[in-house]
Amino acid sequence: MRTSFTPEQLADPETAASAAAIRKCVHCGFCTATCPTYVLLGDERDSPRGRIELIKAMLEDGGPPPASTVTHVDRCLSCLACTTTCPSGVDYAQLIDHARTHIETHHVRPLPERILRAVLAGVMTRPGRLRIALGLGRIARPLEPLLRRLGLKPLAAMLGLVPKSRAGVTAPGHGAAPTGAAQPVRGRVILLQGCVEPVMAPEIREAAIRLLNRAGIDVVLAEGEGCCGALSEHLGRAAEAKAMANANLAAWARAGTIDAIITTAAGCGTMLKSYQQLVGEAVPAKDILEFIGEVGLPPVLAPSGLVVAYHAACSLQHGQQIKTGPPALLGAAGFEVRTVPEGHICCGSAGVYNILQPDLATQLRDRKAANINRTGAVVVAAGNIGCIAQLAPVLDAPVVHPVELLDWATGGPKPARLGL
Image (cartoon, rainbow, N blue to C red; front, side, top):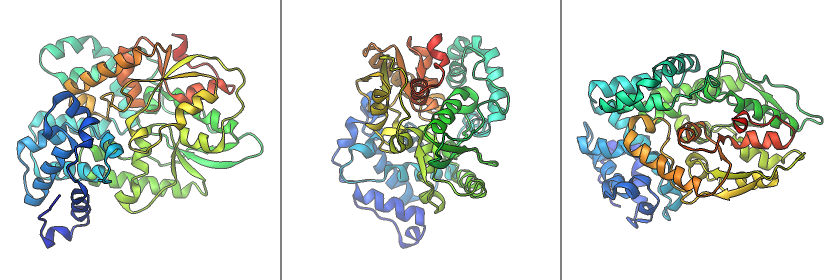
């Protein structure tokens, strides 16, 4: 694809990187078959190929973007399924993140949108505030149908994601503390604490620590670590995301020598692996399932034979290109793993997409739920807290993180959700 950026525009490294990505696009259209919004809407402007055209025009023109461009960029989930199918290697993540930053800088959204996005950035990235918000949300949950009828769909969507039980609303500091690894010690890692997961599902961290210790790995929780920055970046708040990344790098440096930084939320893992591009410093980030696949699964004590549907989080299969390892680990742990039809299509969670774009997210969620139900599985394994929160309300089968199942199979407790 031809571009018409001026030399002055190309002097900006971000614009130069976007121009290089745009020029790689050959308009082959392979991306349209895997793009969730194009599959739903059939609008070329809601395909990666169409959005690249819109982004190109917006960046070349500079200044405030057309309202239609904002609409179609906002509809992108950042699932990155297009990068899996693109034969030309277009860096679509670079383009969509740059586009969002440009929109955030040059476009004035309606006041309700500005307030909602500011609240999401200010609450979702801070566990203490999120814990309070979930408590309030549980009280207000009966208002969800009324809010939907009044047309306040984002607020209704937020209430719909609040867990019905109080299990996820925990006191600060709850969760398994890092303990010494089994002897001999084979490594030392930092476990990313995250923002949403420790509040909504602290049992995932507990299972990860036990599993890593059992595999001979010492676990460190880095003091001073905060949000990975993914949510801020997806909202176009690039400076905020960079500040979070730099704060984390400083916290990890203080933690001493480590072999890897482990994540149990696939979305965070994708973000950490982009720190090189974001702030110029690479980190040895690995998803927990990726890392366990490398160091080896501890001995399986009692294979259950439980039928598990593995839901591949987009940030894992597309963002990090980790595909066959997680279901293979579950199989090695004694579970019968079944493939979900249309597994490449997003469930509609995508960070806070299910709040900002509730109609499209609901269609994708229901489509994913129907495909999962077809597997006949009695439990669903999903490696990202966003996917778990998105799917749990509409599935009969409980949804757990794969690390909970691996921990159970190798000597840990049975996941609490399996007893419900």
